[in-house]
Image (cartoon, rainbow, N blue to C red; front, side):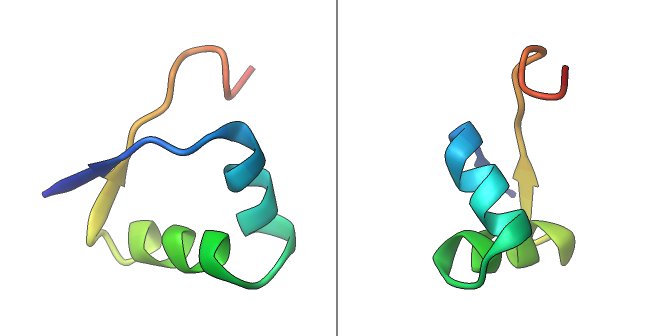
Length: 43
């Protein structure tokens, strides 16, 4: 499975706007890819 590391700006943009960042989050939501995060991002 494809693993994806997103920059914090891309992650936030995907949550609040349409476009490529949102498409990436949709792919992750459909479990077509796995989101890989560092410990610092969710904090």
